[in-house]
Length: 138
Image 1 (cartoon, rainbow, N blue to C red):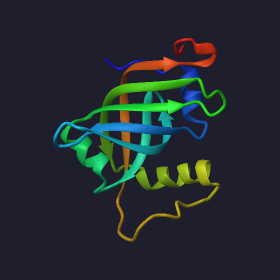
Image 2: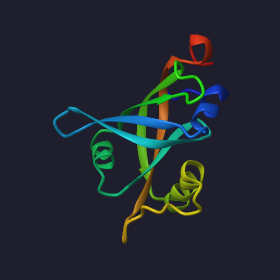
Image 3: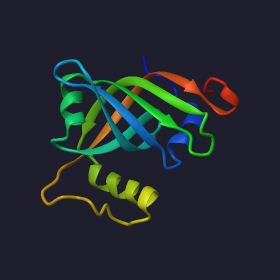
């Protein structure tokens, strides 16, 4: 059952948060990728492109784990366990929004001709890790 994200977690995700996304490949082995993170309500988000391994893995098996470290307190981190769903809706605008936050650019400059962008929306079932002062996230 999805959890409500505490404000402290939302603040972490809105601060140039880099996440390490763990999905399972076709053999059941972990595949790890670093991505720019975002949040929308109680969903954790990132953007990717059609054809990338993480999108392929998540279509086959939507289970996902994402680890995010707090840039301002390196001992604080959150680990999100949940289920992902992939959507094209708003993905082009979303990658530009992330480019603004992470690169200071109005448009995502690394887009390839014909590339189809995707948003991965994660419904979080459990939050692990430790927040400020090494306390569980609240």
